[in-house]
Amino acid sequence: MRFAFAGCDRNLKLFEMLMQAGWQPVKLFSVPEINHLSSNKAIVALAQLNKIPIQLSRVNEQELTALKDLGCDVLVVGSYNWRIPDWRSSFPFAINFHPAPLPLGRGPYPQIKAILDKHQRWAVTCHKIEHEFDTGAILDSENFALDEYDTHESLSIKLQMAEARLGLRVALNFINLWQSAKPQTEGEYWPLFKDEDRTLDFYQSAYVIKKQLRAFGLLECIAYVNQKRLFIKTGYAWQEPPTHQPGQVVQTNGLTVVVACQDGYVALTDWYLG
Image 1 (cartoon, rainbow, N blue to C red):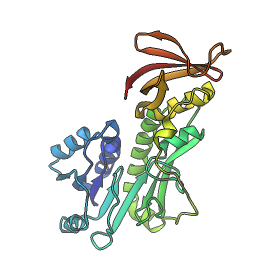
Image 2 (image 1 turned 120 degrees about the vertical axis):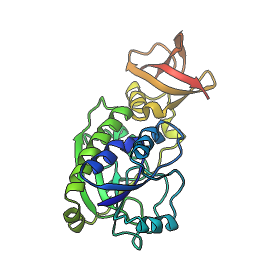
Image 3 (image 1 turned 90 degrees about the vertical axis):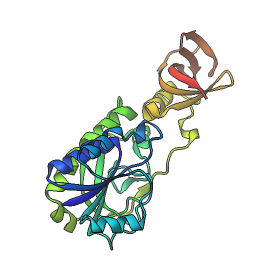
């Protein structure tokens, strides 16, 4: 199977698994690096090593037609910020690996809500690409456990490992899975988080704040301390009989700032002013 791939370093293992299954890559689409989530150095280096053409700008219909001239059979999307144009006149198949147990968790980045809503199971789903995001018939999925200690970063690792397992399974039995794909039922769309969602409210409980810190991780929470806006990379919250008003700074030590919350304290251990 000759395939084009759209993804970044988070999808590196998926890309490798497809090649391991004997699929032949004809082009890599990625996006310009904005932050660690869009890092593409490793996947671009692999493409260069294998002399695979690379494109970092938005794919259009003409470029999909060009893939047809390369003998492309299938477009595989792992992570891509732009909508894929109608592909049906260019090649027979197009699939997306979505980081949620569809039809639950449609949307651009469901990982945050997975932790905030305390899901105990999560999944990667492989589905056909339709015009509406994340609605295509499901070829297969790979499930795994979540627990109360999972963070944005640990969930990301679990997703990458599950995506690689699923990708290999899909590649080795692709035609059968495509033909037997199951249409999705009524789903649930989760919009992209906003700054309000990642802003700490020190009048909330330590439990709620700790969950926010875990859910956003290196995507950073926001806190307002002494009328200054802080972007929080790491922090921790715990319950303790309160003796200070919520939002009051009770201790500083180097970069660490400890702030009182509703029923305890929040230690901001790695942050910067923004």
